[in-house]
Image (cartoon, rainbow, N blue to C red; front, side, top):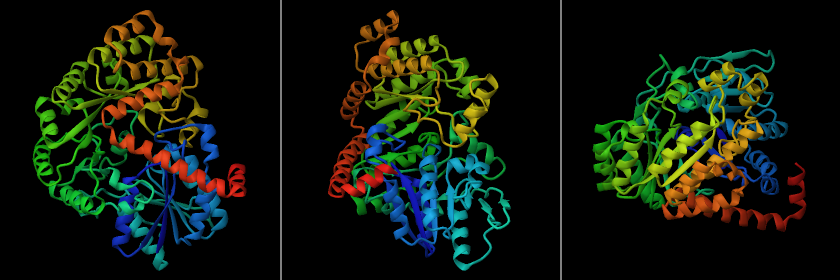
Length: 511
């Protein structure tokens, strides 16, 4: 069976794993990638430029040219509008080819997604086993209406087959290594290797997709699972020989949460792979010993989620249990070991007041990490924080519909804030945090004490972006640096093609 996957803007491990499982079992897979320049839902949004570089029509034409037997979308909430537009266009040209939507968004709101005319099937939860069974039965002409993890729609009768989620397997070592060739022509793997050593998270922060996954998998298997050291090292050795990458990016939600595994893994990694790497973790799973182990194994940067420094608020509303002292201890441990520290903060939370922002700014000024990533809260469907916001009156049914249909702005592009005053406040605070890591502490404290920070929204985004680019380069953030290189290269390449075909450009813009 010829299965065509579609994705936009960035590399996706989930798609790579789905492809590898299908290929291992005799199916053909193809990737149609939309660079979505300047509207990639991941790094950058510039509306005027995104319209000029729009490639959705070309994406639809590429899908049709591949003559697929099945069209598969992996859908985040942020790209649901994009996926819907493409699927609608493809369905008009290939009405008999089935379309399946999987990923976190369809898992969150399957009732919304399955009702769309351009969606025939919806994948719920982890999809390797479900999609393989589905594709194999579809190829043989067998009944596909009763597959665990797949919702099916009978277009002739209107019936929806809402099958239960598939029970999770603990044997994640048995999953073939991800099919990196799906993205390599677009985002060269040699520039840095993305890998996951685990699946799941021990926490259920109310704003995060793990909040949903921990709920739907309760009684259906263990959500947090860890690969063996041997399995991960085998993948890295095989892929290093193939792509000759020089850096590794571990994308686990909490890389350091299993102490015994971590100690064993880092020793083997240093011996067998010996490449610089970056990871993400939680303040509860960081101390001097762990930081030093990471450093000795080749780690150069660690990201820590903080999200709020109002301890009682984040315990009650966000379900985050770390104290500010613990955040400080973890940050200082990393700095002591010579590691770059990236702290993550959310602005625009329900019932957040100005004093919360002032207190957070003072905390970060004293701590002075390498970089602070500030995100404006974007509500994601079926997460607990949506219920909290509804109960408190911060959102209504109209906004809820926007959330469930991917209508909210991205977390780096204003998020779910609608009130102009709050938008200015969030922008000012974000600009402030971008500066406190490089400005002298007395100057940062002056801006906070005098209230001047409240007018930072007038600073052009371009100026702040340039400052952040400088920090990224200075701290060797290879993933961001490679993405900037990719943007320059992809923009130039696409612009050259478009200039050679002016009539084609006009058609694309009219769409």
